[in-house]
Image (cartoon, rainbow, N blue to C red; front, side, top):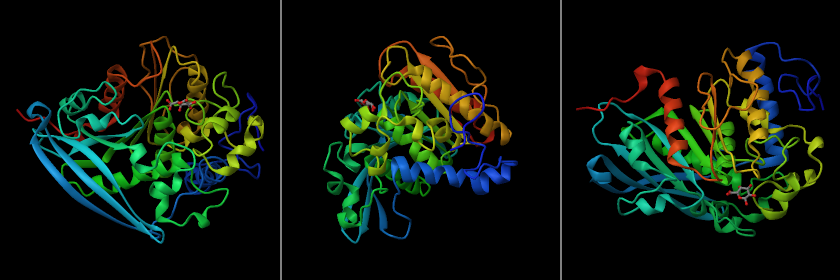
Length: 378
Ligand code: GTR
């Protein structure tokens, strides 16, 4: 494995054969695929290719004047069929009512089932502040991850993976995180068909295990314009080699079903991994990526999350984008929003809060081309 000169991290701009990546084209056409394949084989697993299953979408309900009259609530059933059977997943969304153009969308990969609070009524949730999102002219969509695949060991076949026979699984097959991420892409398939949504301005957001999922979703699916990882930590934004929080051995021990079987080989052997997490962030380039940390979240290790942002910068630079724009972690409540890698550190514990959402939307407002933004009427 090639190491970069300043650190022990694998170098994203050196091919596995040792040659440097010399142009944006070499990155796009060869190196990006090489790195993504390493992540698939050693960490997250391979997800099924399009064409190996059928999918259908059905709008189940449409409720105007929701969220205090500001939004239409829409519930969609996404059904998938494969050789092992069929599974249906619900997608919940609110689209702003008073818009003159399709709205850009924030899709939350909801690991806490908080979005369910809004299924039939206007509830309030700091974790998914749908009212605030809509107020700012964005559509708010959410997928409940346990509905996609239960968050417990031994249950992959109960979830969406059950559309394929278990006998097809290999050591580099998708784990729960990749299954959740795959469902995020299927939600985007639906959103592309929704006339109220500007799917070219779609952000995927997740917290913690959902943040790891959002990153993998954005790495696999280049249609997402913005990828947001909140407090994602180990096997999310935090560098495996430097983290002082959760290690690969810890995560494989507690959550043996999240990643592919091959990942277990790296428990206690971080330095043998052919990639590190800055390269996952680099897979988003030249799109927008956002990492957020919290001061009391030592298990996710803010320093290693920030260091991954810095180490991803050379790839963004090669593609003509600026990165996070600082080499030291900023003080709390001082978001870094100038480049294509956004970052903030929030005071407080491991959580997804209205402050975090405000930062994500500020970042999107700043970087999405103005012409593409929906405009609130009246
Ligand atoms: C922890 C786990 C972390 C993180 C967190 C969460 O128990 O060790 O990797 O994913 O759960 O999802 O809240």
